[in-house]
Structures are given as structure tokens and as C-alpha cells.
Amino acid sequence: MTKKDDYFHYNNGEAVTKGAFRISASQVSKFFDSTSQWYHEHLLGEGGFTGNTASNLGTVVHAGIEMFVTEGGVDYEAIDAHINSIKDPEVDTYDILNNYGCMLDVALSYVESNMPDMVEEFVFHELLPGIGVGGSIDARYVAKRRLKDWKTTAAKTAPTKFSRNYWFQQMTYAWVLKQKGITIDYIDLVYITKGEMGRVSEKTGKPLKDYPPTVTVVTEEVTESSLELIGSCLQIIAESVKAWNEQPEIRHLLAQDSRVKTKPKPILFK
Image 1 (cartoon, rainbow, N blue to C red):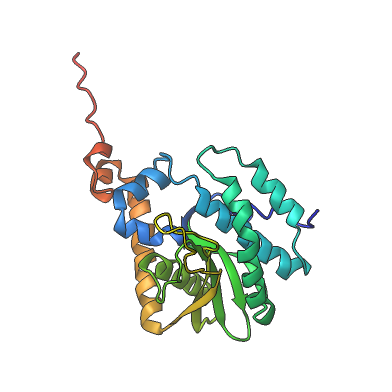
Image 2: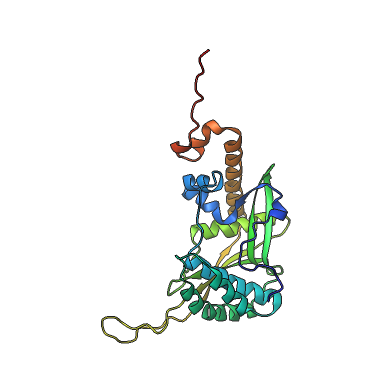
């Protein structure tokens, strides 16, 4: 078995946040792009994403990388046991078992020559009393002043630029570290494609082109202007959460959703 108790569940940083409301780095973009949904999930506790086949595949690839970096090897038995323990009928565990090994092989080949100094480092910074921002960084390179985030994708070829939500996520980590006196110069997305091998055309019966798993790195420079932008965004979220807690009568305005409007108190007749 592995030395760490659990490689397969996200670290929510309770020991660090100590009860403070945490703005998740991975959800910063969602605050602006799906405002009502963000409030329903994070302040009303109404559901949210619980996982699917793709996210579970990503989890085990991340776990394998963390094992490799921290322990020098991968506990494949532990990974297989975790996959087989997934009970969600919507998750295709066969697909995960069939694909994670090849994806992990190409990922570890990259990691071996790009060994990070720290993996799954949880960082947090308080923006207002009881309200902060943070999350778990996939990989940090101290001397290179660089962050990397492993991203698994089912695409045959990896994206070639940062998506909006990933930019917000990684730049948030760079900003939080900056508040701690740690400068980050570059953020990387390391895409690990699922690949498609051995396919046959339904029409002709002939073999289709193979797409083996690959690793592609997309890089973004961290600039003062980008840090200023993300810092202002985080402050807006923190002040919005504060207003939500202190002024329930404007919650529908904050959430852009009349369904959460506070109902007037009934008038009691004497």
C-alpha cells in the first residue's frame, strides 16, 4: 500500500482554512460566467458537480503522478482497487481501467524529466475576515518559479492555449503565492490526452488512424497586470460573499436570481 492515506480525494484544506469560507481557485471563473449557479452551489449548498468518467480518470492519473513524485513509484494495485470501488452507475470503470495506464506512462515520462519540487501543495490567503481563497496546486518548481497543472482530456489532440477557467485557476494560485512572498513567472497546463487506438471504421471495416496518448504543454507568462486583474476579481468575490452574509435582502441581486429573494416578513395584526 501507499504511504499516504488517501491519494484519491481532494484536499479541502480544513486544517489551513480553520473554518473560513474558501473561494476555490478552480471555481473563480464560474463566479463570473455562471453567477447564479456559483451562489447556489457555494452559499446555498445546492448540489454541484459530483464526478463522471472523465473526472475519475483524471483523479487516478493525478494520483499516479503524485505517488511517483513523492514515493518514487506507482501503487497500481491501490489505483485499481480505488477504481473498482467506484459505485456510481454513470461512471464507466472499465473505460478508466482500460485507459489510465497508457496515459500515466506518457505522463510519468514527462514528469521524470521535469520533476517538481512540490506536489498537491495546499495554499490559502485570507481576503477578508473569515473569507479567503485557495486550493491545491498540482506541481510547483521553486527555482524555475513555475506552476504546472496536469489536465487529462479525451480530445485526440490537446488544446494549444489556456481556456478562461484554467487561466483564472492557475493565475489565482500565482496570486496567492505572491501574497506569501513567492514569485511565479510562468504557469503551465500539461495536457495528457486519452488517445484512441485500434479503432475500426463501421462503414468500411478498415483500421482508423491511431491517436496514442500524448503530453502537450501550454504556457502563460505571469505579469503584474495579470496579477492585478486576478487580485481585483478575488476581492470582488470576497466582498460579494460578505454582502451575502450581512445583507440577505440583496442576495437576489448578488446571485442575479430572483428565486433567492428574501420573502417579506408577514404582518402580524394585534
